Figure: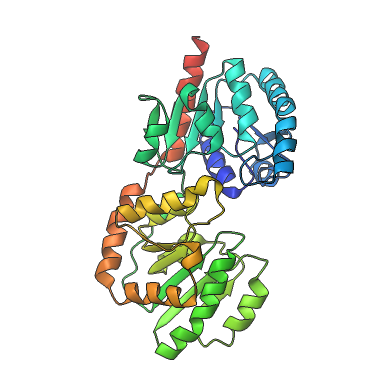
Length: 354
């Protein structure tokens, strides 16, 4: 299993790994010591080996040169690990650490299964797209990047609790604002700027805002005197519970967020991270926008007034909220982890026959 750096890469891989472990398989992760996998994988009880690797996208020229110089050694280290572990198949969630592992798998003739949850595949998956055993994708449009017959829309593994959330039908209108585990400066600033507008309009509203650790204290201090019902927290530990009490979600458009919103049938206002590799968050949001399943506001256009307007327009139009909830569910894919595990087992059997 490879793919790391952020929770968005690690958590889905762990979900697949758990299914494989329950089926009696041994699982090895390959990652870097700097990524979140170095902590999350051992905590989940799985083996992990480390290689050195770095990014090529949206980094400076010096970093690109360093990464390029490191690449042969990274592929060599991954090749040695695969030769020693002798896996039946390799599973990749993408990210910079996955590139050397995928290259080594192809060199060793080991079947490679990639999961690409974004509408626009990452650089590593685009490079190996023609040689994968199977590509598991999150959107129909992503099929175009992989060979016919080698691609399946499975979605991204999402906790079962998201699929079981009942629609909220009563109580004060509640908005969950989240920029992910680390927060988002644009959303923090816009939320803070909107509180005076909500107070002046006497809007009956409750706001639950996840700021991330870095800006929590400054935002929470202002919220405490803003006169708005709700809470500001550095991290929402139980997001399914937060969704179950919400009418609307305002957040980024990473693959994990999109799949959780779809599974929970949440109406949403998506604010794509402008610095995401290949602007993939914008494309994710556009897919939902084209299906009238979400609203989208570009990061540069988001401020307190725009946030206030987006929330008010939807709060005053419950019919539009209901339509968004119904339309977004088409993007929900239960059983993604189980399906990925099945395909890995199939790939391992096919690899033995080569």
